[in-house]
Length: 84
Image 1 (tube, rainbow, N blue to C red):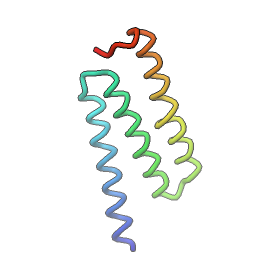
Image 2 (cartoon, helix red, strand yellow):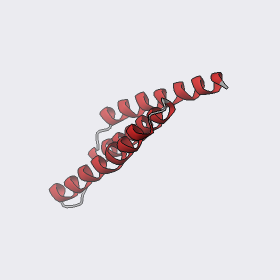
Image 3 (cartoon, rainbow, N blue to C red):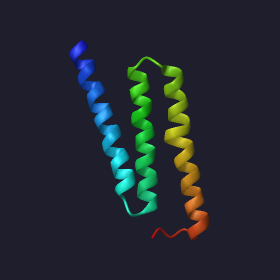
């Protein structure tokens, strides 16, 4: 059972790092914002694995939902809906 948790922990951290690198690498801002939301999901999953459910819920609400939503709405208002 312990090996399974270690493997899951490594996979979540690997996903977090890959999605963070993709968020920086993408040229389109909308793709970067979506990758940033994925970073928030992986961070929330890691907090759940570390037995911190209160922090995981906060990270899921803010890091995976609210922040990307604010960025997307801002991009749509600035650009008039077209993604360059």
